[in-house]
Length: 232
Length: 217
Image (cartoon, rainbow over all chains, first blue to last red; front, side):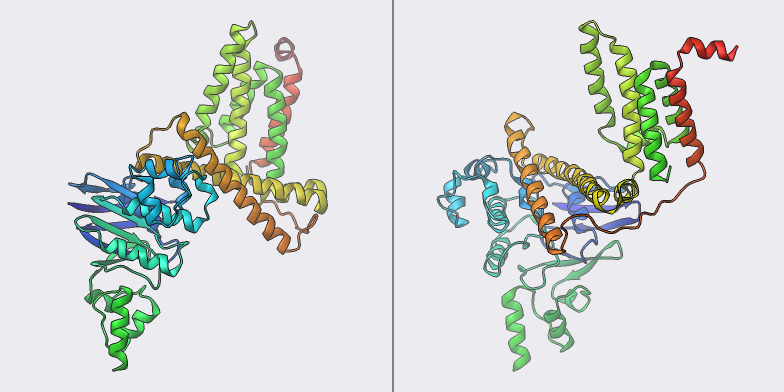
């Protein structure tokens, strides 16, 4: 199972994105500035945008899901229960896990964006996908919910998970870090070695690296543990 | 055509001319081929051909009800081509400049602001529809009557939310009525000849075709 960007180039009038690399099963983090092209990369990975040059190959991948930044786009049900059912899931189970019991008959657009995002992520993460692309999964969520999403992502095994984000604090355990630099997708490397080369690293990770402390990974617990080493 | 004032003038002249007669509509079509990017306009307006096809359906209905469907189709298609060109050539902030130039800093500013916000919303809705189609493909949900309600709900919801945010922003910035703006326009070499030509086409549209050939003899 692999996702291959074979010299894929997406062109716009004054902007372009180049991607060349292989995504194998595991959790991949794609970081980059706002407007760097993370969403475009997500859409290409999901097969919703075709590159102008090169190709994107999804080898042995049978199920693909992209979670868009704004959960409203995914709503196809007139009620929250219908929305959950449209994902092929049991509304009672999903609503209970998302903390939205008793909301089943409500209009999904009556929910706040945070609640809708939580519901949407619970629906997506309740199923297994060969290729799961999460575009800014932490936007509109509070710290507790971000931690919860990280835990749920950590439980994903077997498939390829790509997280495109500029989140600076909460991350799941990541296998590979990628960056978009000047319109080009760059494989920064596997963790923990990639941390010394990660140009978009959050300030507190950069601070640790500058002190010569390389955390095992970038999850909250890994960073906390590494911070304790710093004070020893 | 860079100058928005010339474009407005040409649009009014050509639309009236095309509406008046088939002969004028043919002249307008030739003007569209010569003075605009022509077919490239249609390539960029994804729904252009669809809208022309819709006017074709109306023409067939007119024809069945005893009217001159063909004449309607030719004239409407040419008017639509002019409309696509105007939409294609517009630049952000241009309606504001044009409106303030025409009606001044009070009413002109308000009209221009409303026009700019409407155009922005149209582009926003086009992006939203693209994303909705992506979401439907992902689930996968077959587009149909069952999906029109949530899709329409989403579009209305986001537009109302956006309108509310924009209203808050304008009110926070102290907007009550009117504003100050110095309109500026750029002009390309071909703008004036194209505008003059559009006026000539309107004049010709008022002359019966038979008279034109007598004049030519």
